[in-house]
Every structure is written in C-alpha cells, then in structure tokens.
Amino acid sequence: MSKSLFKDFDSVSSKAWKQKIQVDLKGADYNDTLIWKTNEDINVKPFYHADEFETLPEISKSKATKWKIAQSITVTDANVANLKAIDAIHRGAESIIFNIASENTSAEHLLQNIDLDTVNVHIKCGFLSEVFTKKLMNAIPNTAKTPQIHIHTDIIGNLAKTGNWFSNLNDDFSKLKAIVKSTNQISIDLSQYQNAGATIVQQLAYSLAHANEYLNHYEAHKDTSLKEINATFNTSIGSNYFFEIAKIRALRQLWTTLASEYGVSEDCKIIATPSKRNKTIYDYNVNMLRTTTECMSAILGGVNEICNLPYDSLFHKPNEFGDRIARNQLLVLKNESYFDKVNNPADGAYYIESLTEQLAEKALELFKDIEANGGFLSQLKEGTIQRKIKESAAKEQADFDAEKLVLLGTNKHPNNADKMKNDLEISPFLKIEKRKTLIEPIINKRLSEKLEIKRLNNE
Image 1 (cartoon, rainbow, N blue to C red):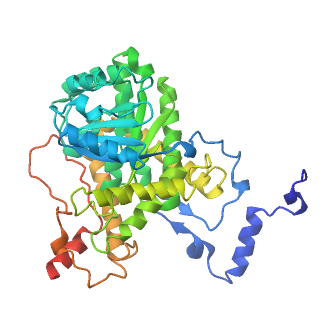
Image 2 (spheres, rainbow, N blue to C red):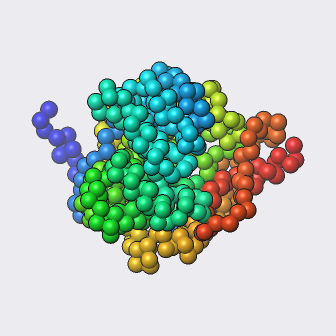
Image 3 (cartoon, rainbow, N blue to C red):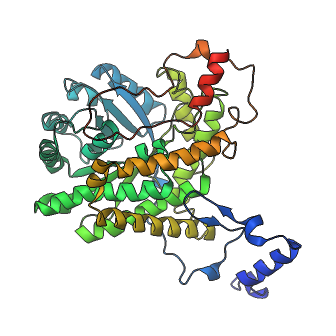
C-alpha cells in the first residue's frame, strides 16, 4: 500500500482535543482536574500533540540495541573478584564493574582471563593513585586489540560525597591530570544527587556543572589532551518512569551542548543503576518490581550499560542469589522482552519529547545560574548545593510521610506480619560519622528509613 491510511481522516488539532475534554468535564476546571504539577516545576498535561512543537525533534543518538548488562563486584581479593567476574560473564554479564578499596590490589590477577575485546571492564577506586592506574593500563594483555577498560576517577564526586578531597585541591587535580593523560577519560557521578533527594532538574544541572569544572580546569591550564577526553556519567534511576526516560535523553543533549563549547567529543557513555532512595526492607520483594521498571526507563532513555541493584542489597551482604536475580532481570528484558530490538524507541513520543525539552531547558537555566555565581565547586564550598538538595529531599519526604508519594508494602498496604529484625545482616539505615570535613557532604538517605525504624522497634 503506497497510499497513507491517515490521509483518509481529518486531523484533529490540540485546541479541538482540549475543547472536547472541557465539554466532557461538565464544568470541572481543566487545570485543577487534569494537570499534574511536579517537583520539577513541570505541568503534565492529559495529552500531547504534534502542533505543540515548532519543529519536530531530531532523531536521538542513543542506540537501545547496544545496551549492555553490567555486574558490580566489590574487590577485597583480586583472584576471588576475578573468578566472580568470569562466572558472571558466563551467566550473561557483558560488562564488569570492579569497586576497589586498596591500592595493593593486583591489577594482573584482577584482569586475567577476561576478554577485554568483548567485555567492558570498569574500575572504580576508593583512592586516588596514578601509580595504580599505570599498573592497570600495563596489565592489559598485548593480545587485546581494542581493550574496553574504563577507569573512573571523580575527585569532585568524592569531595561532594565525603566532604573532603582525597588530599587537597591542587594535589588531586595534579594526580587526576596524570590519570586522564593515560586514560583519556573523565567520570561524573550524578547518582549521589539522586540518592540524596535532588530533583531531576537539579541532577542534570549539577552533573553538567560538575563536568564543567573538569573541562574548565583543563582549558584554563591549556592542556592539549582536552580534545581526546571521553566522558562517562554514572546515574541512578528513580521510579518516575517517563521522567527518567526523559532525564537520560536530556543528559545527552546537555552534554552535547557543553562539549561543543570546549571542542571535545560530544558522545558520552551513561551507566545506570536503580536508585536506593525508594527501596525498602519491608515487603522487600517489591524492590524487584521497582528495579525492573527503573531498568526499563534506563534502556528506553538510551543508556549504554545497566548495573541492576539486587532486591536485598539494603540488608543482606552481597550474595550469589541476589546477584543472579538482579542479572536475570536484565537478561529477561533483553532476551525475552526484546528491549534490545529497536534503536531510539522513545523518539517521536510527544509526551517524552516534551519532557526532555523542558527538563533540558530548566537544567540549562539552573546550570547558567550556578556558573554566574562562581561555579559548582564554589557553591559546594558555600553549602548552596547541599542546601538546595536538602530542600528538595525534605519536600519529597513530606510527600512520602503524607502518603502522597507511595511505596507499596511500606507506607501503603503494609504487611503487618512482616518481620525483619532478625534478617538484617547489614544495617540499612543512615549512619553519619562525626569527622572534620572541608565542606558539608551530600548525604544519601532512603525515604522509608524513619518508618522502618519505628516498625523494627515495635517488633
């Protein structure tokens, strides 16, 4: 059929749709009844239409057919971690994330027998060491033709999370410069903003300002390696399904805008992990449902890799069953639900396109305000960023406490027979250590903590 079926029907404008809805409301106010007002200051309408766009959005660059399943492994012993990685690869993992706490970890043992041409390996260190980075780069086998190894070094992220530099500003940037010269990689962790309660607009703006501190530093020091830099963003995905799809898409757009100003690669990698903020210890199996929809948002938004969160990670030590279920959730999405068959699946959905545009615009406006007032590091030092996140988190917490924001099995439809006191292998609650810090750290906190503590005390 060469003739378009839709030419046989008259088009209906958005104005006509709204008039029809207004009639059906029988006097009820359209805005009060059908408009959803969000914490991002975005008003969600009951319908979206092509005539609301001056020009139709361009095709996005993300390739949903290419997303990879990642497995996170905490490294205490290099040989043990290596065996876990190889086992995870045999069971479907396509990417490994090693979280390393000690500089004494053997890089050679960690990477042995892993095919770096087909498996992505990410290294996240709890320390800053150019020597260890060189060991990692030297441990790459000569047989690897195109090794996919990524070393995540985020000194500003560490400052925001802990309140301190690894050493001090000048020393940290000096070591980072040496690391970036050997890896051509910068890493920006915006997951901590989400887990601390920042709105999506704040997450996007802060990550952009965060990245800009690195790019601005390299440009100011006339570093010739700037042009070779590749950026990786680590993000957490919440439960606001369509907004999270739009967040990933907006992040790519914003990075493209910023990167073009510095002449660096406009492509970036995005690694997503489900949020901890909305996870619970009561009715914990619901966490599997939450992480599944969050992973779906990440895929449809166009992330490169997804590292799922085990349903019991809040209160159990890492275990084979929890890891396997988390990995299998992604395998089901890829192999049984066909979430890797279509590129750019969210393109052309007017609602998502509108959300993407609004989030990007609002985040860019906030980013410009941050830069006009001294930049991200300056506002961290002044406590402005922390205060803004606290305000957003308090508003979200109030919505949860009032049951406007629902976590099933916890603040709505709880199972009162559910007992958890004897099942806690690790503490799921926030612990604030009293120590001297340069700035106030950004603290991650779950919404359900206060309610859970109350329930535990009554068991």
